Image (tube, rainbow, N blue to C red; front, top):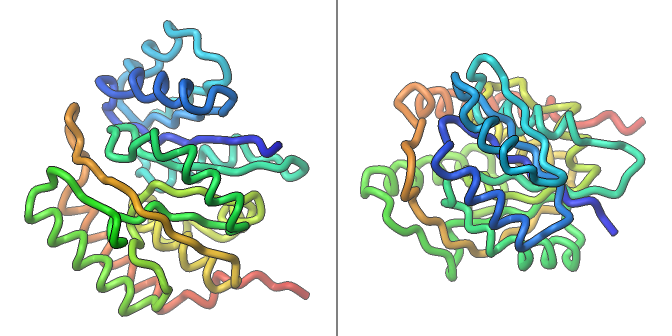
Length: 243
């Protein structure tokens, strides 16, 4: 049996985190959940500590360092080279539906892939309640990523993913060089692709948050676009020397 680790990066998600952890624990009771919190206060930590969840690790980082770096930090904390593990990353705001977890894990195991992406852009997928401007930007970002990086996936930027142990080991060794925000999602994809690891996608229903506020801003968007260009110019640096 593989250990299931779920990494949840958080920033001011006090209105969502308790509901999400409860829902995950109903669906996958034995999962190990790691919450990496970049909020300025300890509100989320207080909520988690009062709830007495089993197999839930709360980590508070004093300074906000970005969603991508939070996921890498969680990987590093939970990764054990000698154990059979899978790692899942997902957002805290319920845009990634925890009810999809069982189906996605089953597909991940049966398809024997190293990275499974829950895509917002497959035929059966849907995006609900996003503003038109956000939809256009997301679609344009993915089209730019496809044009530059030429990886055969439909969604480069959704952070609802499952990774194998060997993919996680590769990520810890190679990723985190481009930036610390959403660009790490594309960086990870490049690292897995150039090393010829197996990538698969599945449909997903993406729902805009009902509670709390998004921390996506113009600076993050600009850094992500610049990061795509950097990845295009440096993607061969992600190859592991197999000699």
